[in-house]
Image (cartoon, rainbow, N blue to C red; front, side, top):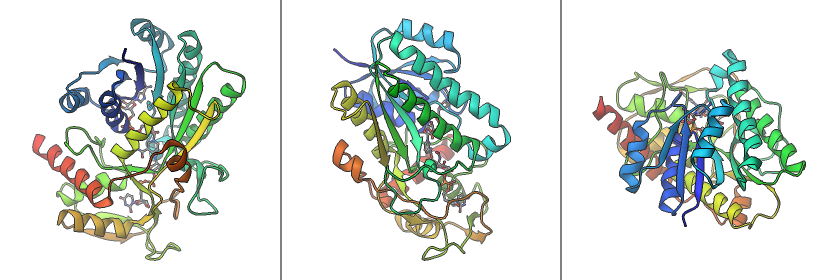
Length: 342
Ligand code: NAD
Ligand code: WQD
């Protein structure tokens, strides 16, 4: 019999790619999403790719009663992947309470309901933002957690602590915290991808919108950092590679192969790329020019961070496989598709 997995935020960017991989691995998926940062067209995209339409419930994870109704409607949920959260760093500085309420209450509701519905495990979307500027690079899971620089980042740290305390108190379920580095790209079919809301704050959607002519030029935030070319360095991880790690994490929990009830993994490529290198890689991969200009630093930016993914490589048997060129081509194909639809 198919095992049933609840995916909160499953209509979102990383969630939708994960639903595809789960369905292609034989899981039955129930999506909960309030569509606050996504569209139900994504469900069509998932169906077109996989031939299976996932169950979809439009609901807010902060609404405990609505969550109970859904868990009653879909009995036997074995595991949860919890993507649902607000994620815009700048907005979180302006509206901290919205971020604390949405991100913390959603998690609290799920953790309270899991024992009632005998859910065996929860995979939580965390972020490399918990490391701040690491003292040692590449950064591994033992690195100290640095004080958060935004309410958004703080919600990730607090959520990790809430899960840690709950497991420590003997909760009858397991958890895997996945710390993503910088997810980019889209499904190779270009049927799903990242749907930026308004002016993109993240590099890749701004870059592809510039390349296609929606934006005049890409601002490169600083070339005076202590990096080889002066621009910031990140670990850009393909979203499909990232999605696959979630399936492995779910398999691992449901097959009781975890080494402890709480496990933590960095999900990155292990390679850092500067902003200027990334622009050049995009131009090489697509043949499309990206008008760009160096401007001042963006407040709050980390200078350089990239993952030591050895733990995930060894323990999960997971490695990032896609090349940066293929990944950037997938982002470009998705941007072209979005433009054609307009
Ligand atoms: P996204 O905004 O595309 O997806 C999140 C989804 O959750 C959206 O579809 C949104 O409508 C939904 N949602 C938000 N609040 C909800 C609520 N209360 N109830 C139900 N649905 C709700 O974001 P994403 O990039 O796919 O990120 C997924 C997760 O990964 C988030 O938790 C995010 O913080 C985390 N993360 C993202 C990145 C990144 O760079 N994209 C990096 C590290 C961690
Ligand atoms: C990448 C690099 C910018 C835009 C954020 C969150 C983090 C995580 C991922 C969820 C940086 C530079 C960007 C632009 C630029 N999310 N840049 N011009 O800042 O690494 O991380 O998203 O957990 O928490 O903080 O990602 O894509 O915004 O920036 O030069 O127009 O691109 O300075 O070096 P970031 P990003």
